Length: 283
Ligand code: PMP
Image (cartoon, rainbow, N blue to C red; front, side, top):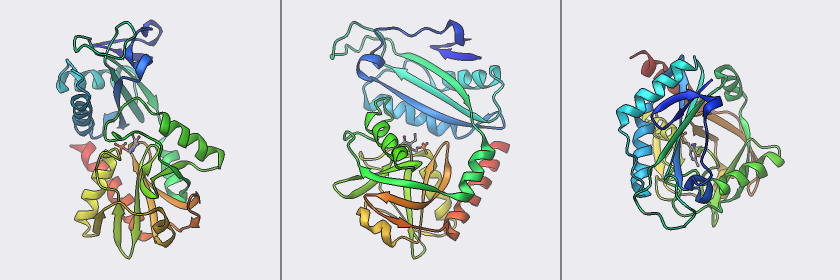
C-alpha cells in the first residue's frame, strides 16, 4: 500500500508525520475527497479547483500546480490498484514551532491515501434510504472552506449515530444549512429546495452536479435557506456527497420528526447521476 507525501509516492510503512505540523496544532489545513470509479477519478478537476479555492481563502500557498496534483493522484490510484474507492488529499500549512501566528514562509505539507469503497453497497443503500438526525449547527462561519477542522461535524455525526441515524442534518437558529458531511435537498410540489452556496455551507461538487442535472430535467429550483419545520411538509428529501452520491432520506428524527417515501424526483436524479457518472468516465 502506497501513500502520498509531498511530491512523492512512498510506502505507507515509510510515511511519517511531523509533531510540529500546524495541522495537528491548529487544524490548519484543507482537504479533498475524490471518488474513484473503475480506476478513474471522477470530477477531479472540480475537486482540485475547490482545493485551490480553500487554499486562497486561508492565505495558504499551495506551492504545487493542479497538473502535478493530478499526476500524483493518478499515480497513487494506479500504484494501489484501486478500482472502486476514494482518494483523500490533505494540505496543511506546514511545520513550525507551535504559535498561533503563521509567517507565510512555512512550506505546506501534502499527504494522501486511498481507501476502498463498495459501489454495490452504496447502490443498495440508495434504494433503501437512510434516517437523518436534525440537530444544531455549532460550526464556525466559514463552512465554505473545506478545512480539516471538523469538530462540529464530528460531534453531530456521533450524535446522529447514537440515535440510529446515518447522517446529521444541521440547522442554525432554526434554518437548515446542510448535513454533517453532505448537502440537503427537499422536494415539494416538483420543486427542489436547497441552501444557497454561502459561507454557511460547503458547496458540494455533487450538489453542483445535481443542480445541473435538475436544470436539464427542467425541475424548478430554489436556492434559499428554509426553516427546519418545512421538512415536515416535504414530498421527498435526499442528501448529496462524493461518497454517498444521491441518497434518499426516509426518516427525520430529533429537531424534526417525519417519515417519507423515496419519490420519483429523487429517483430521476439518481438515474441522471449514474448516467452523468458513466458518461464522464468514458471520455
Ligand atoms: N457538506 C459538508 C460539510 C461535507 O463535508 C461534504 C462532503 N465533503 C459535502 C457537503 C458534500 O460535498 P461533495 O459533494 O463535494 O462531496
